[in-house]
Length: 180
Image (cartoon, one colour):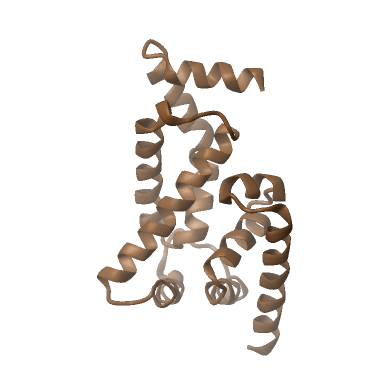
């Protein structure tokens, strides 16, 4: 915890801010990209959201109160940026966010950066049918192997609520996978 506080101090100090922020980007770029990619699906969109996330983190460092871990705060920003991105893009295309995500999954085979097979595509289709919160919880738990406590900090939800959401998500996905 002491080490994190020193890192936060370096991020806030104008003399060390640029170097500390470069360290933050190199440390979080890959896991954040994976997190965002799981939500927005498309590689180019994930890159855009990742860039927006780092801009927002940099602009709002002064407002970080340290009530949660830096990791959780950054992931919350990435999650919110991803959801906002999907909602805005869906609205521009005259679709609901669910319809937009289904369309993204249909286009996933053409994505050079997707290396999954038919089962992976089917899983993505099943996930896209879940309510937004269940999607987020499932993706964070299943793909990123985050602990419930970490997800709780990121989403601002109780651990019990997250466990219930994950349980329901798994049941719906299993049902979809066996039915289709």
